[in-house]
Image (cartoon, rainbow, N blue to C red; front, side, top):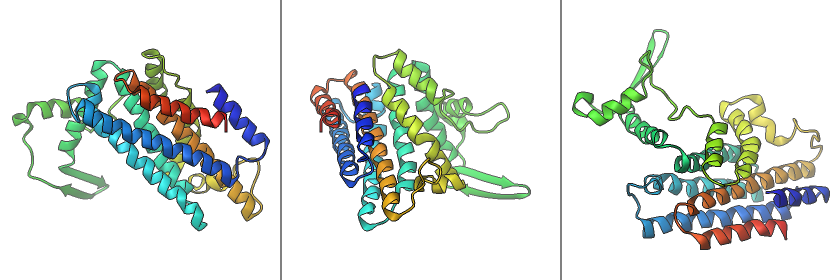
Length: 287
């Protein structure tokens, strides 16, 4: 981690971090890490079994989904070549990818009760989506996809629904009561994984992406650079600013994937994949 940060400072000192060269270099890092992620879930499917009663097995679909989110980010980033900037949209997807990585690692190392809550949440959500309604004052709209399900005939589903229903009878919409910092602390406490890459990504992605998702003025314009100390005064300066943001985004996501690979390796031997991931990170330090 320290060596990577030193390398970033060197880039910034040379005023090259906003160049096409470094954006492409770090985009390439991200793409290489995505390929390793794809190899990871294929390894699990072929060697460990797609679904089984282990945590790795149960979390397979979460791992599988990360590659698609990462691919979507990469595709949107390529639109820079057409003089279009979709970095704001990339940030929103980056938050999703980051949360999936953190969830995945947390679920590998949390206690059994918390892990069971994650599985139970999906069960009750599958029930609730069959009959949904939304009320504003005297108005109500409803979406019913099926005949009502009698929970008395489905005890496991009933228990899951009860677990995620508040005392006021309303659905509980988060599967865990832990904050992101508490989840990271659990990962840190129950393994020897360095969580600083994840912390760096939370700091650099989460808040800005949240603003973008919530539709605030800051959230729709932060990527232009108006809120930073140096406001772009030309198209070239704007491009350099966006290149720098893309470079940082790719670095954060690439190193977070490395952290996930570390966590996976502690549960199943994937030394060859881990070795390649380490080399990808080393290449940042030694261009």
